[in-house]
Length: 143
Image (cartoon, helix red, strand yellow):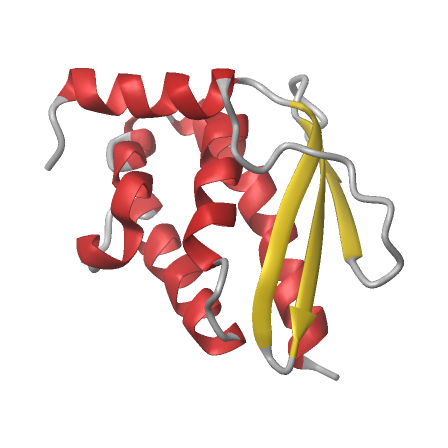
């Protein structure tokens, strides 16, 4: 379990300096838009998959700290993974959010959200971008 201050630093770093926040104008990428009906979170996720491997994932839009940081971290985690590995990472994240046993090693910085379940009103913030990523993976997987 991470120290509370380290979690805060991780979240703020990914919010203030996201690695993957960028609009993509490339027809090779697929995109999914996801927005909350109860807050400002409104993101579009872009993904490029080749030969069953996640080559690149970006996102753009407006989001709170939790939304932006969780989406940015997940983009980092799945890059370079095959679709099954990426799905597995996302499933571990959902287990963590649902207070079920999960593999901390697979989540790296996403472990910063391990107490998100304690704030039910923020769970959507921490999953809105992840749901878009999951939709993209599932779309590629059905090809």
